Amino acid sequence: DNFRLALEAGMFKSAKRSIDLFLARNPQSAEAYFYLGEVYRQRQEKSKRKKKYDKTADYVEALKAYEQALSWDAGFAPAFRGKGRVLQKQGKINEAKAAFKEYLRLAPQADDHEYIEQFLTQDQEGKPQG
Image 1 (cartoon, rainbow, N blue to C red):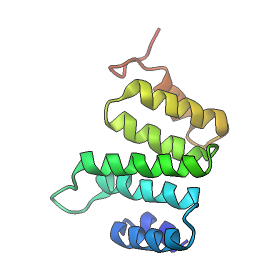
Image 2: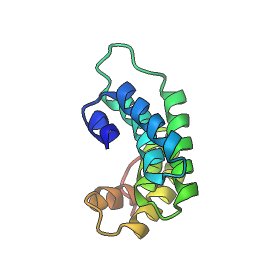
Image 3: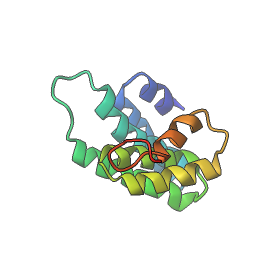
Image 4: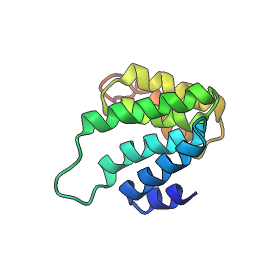
């Protein structure tokens, strides 16, 4: 649980170190792989440094971590949400929508379901369809 606190505090190196240690003891933890994906995704958005990390590499690593989480637990909804968010940032709208649809199927009462449903109704340019 230390990695969750470090992640919430924006301490990405510390969070990654804790996750790596946890995964060394629990290599089949979908939750830990999800949080590893969150480290890579969130450090783009919350970096306090003037120089940002390489988004391309971070997003690739985030997607790998989310996929690993799903390989251990195919019904782990947060991994689909994280995957959708990264794909959305990459401009892969149809893939993002597929991930978000699966997220909502698994977690229909999620706190962010309204935001996700709104995104699902947009076209490729982010405009409402219809």
